[in-house]
Length: 205
Image (cartoon, rainbow, N blue to C red; front, side, top):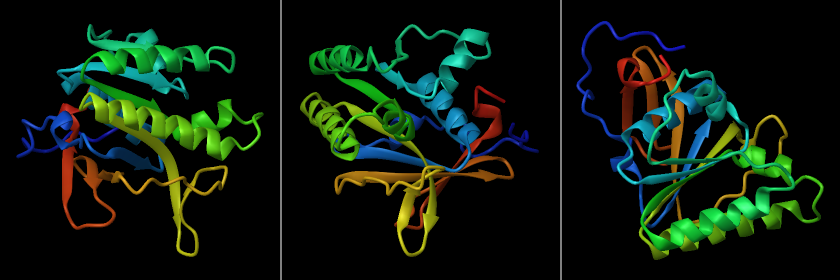
């Protein structure tokens, strides 16, 4: 999936939890699901807090079930269906209200898909995101929302492949994932800072 670096990277002690923001929604953008899988596998591996993982595309869950990724003690993995989504959201909200956690919504595309029969699906998705953000802020937790996107000059970021306009909150930190020669490159679209996750630190390599 990722090429092994030719030499030890200067980011060998990188812990992804430290790059997350408590007061903002951490919006992770990617064009390839394997980029996202590599990023979240490293984030979950690094996490010192309880992780509440809402897995809507089941990619990460598949790696855990197959044994490619180990079961981690501080990880609560939720695999919702249309029928169980509301109950699982309630469980996540209760757990997140009791202590500091990392909440991962993987992915926004999957949330749209699972709610596609509802009227005003965009408003419903935005309400869920804002509710999770409010709970995270209350307990100084971290909210991470992954979205598979592409950029169109005339429209900005849109969800891929559906073409739906990405719902963006003002209080968000955007992290763009791209392939690099030595691993995954993390960049901030509105700034110039970049960070590399060396491939030898990505659990899925």
